[in-house]
Length: 255
Image 1 (cartoon, rainbow, N blue to C red):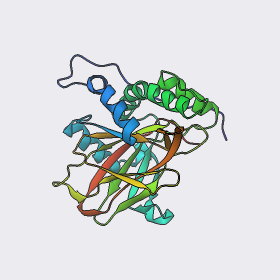
Image 2: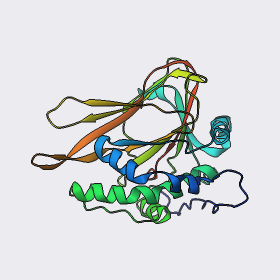
Image 3: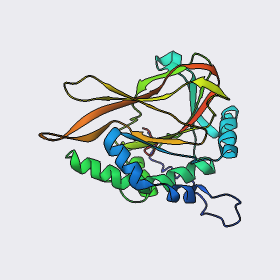
Image 4: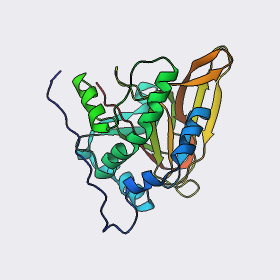
């Protein structure tokens, strides 16, 4: 594998000339105490209207532009479900780069606290660019943010987005389509397997532009005998009609 360093394009700082709040401002305005509490309690949390309708529609329209992607995956060919998705190539679209840069510093303290609770020595730096340097030094140089497209009867099997040795414990999915108008069905589903217990399912209702923050692999739970790890997987239920687009923001890169 080539050792050439891959550098993500840095997002531009917030501009006062924009007519609506930029991504950095919207992320800053979110109730992160509530997000942290929900993640601790259920392994997932929502941030409403993280993207505006025009941003959602512009991102969904990128699916036809092959030049901005590095690969395309047809789920049925791999037993992943039905539907397809594409991984973005560097340099990422500006709004995706901004989401990565703005969200990561809010999530890193939660990730560090979780690892400490679970007895995992890995800790994460405050800055996402510094974390990417760690990934790239280990050979994880391929960008992982992706755009997913579903049609009628498509679905996404329960899974985990790991991609290599370095895995940031939290990721974000943002719904780009409007339920009831663009599609029906297609709920975001999270399952949690606790030791010696049956799996617990969480269905997360989203509207266009809403984000769900969730655990990638496992999270800590306080039990009567101390903290233990629970394993999580996520997916999307069957689309009953229409088309559904989602963008996934993953903070570690792939080998």
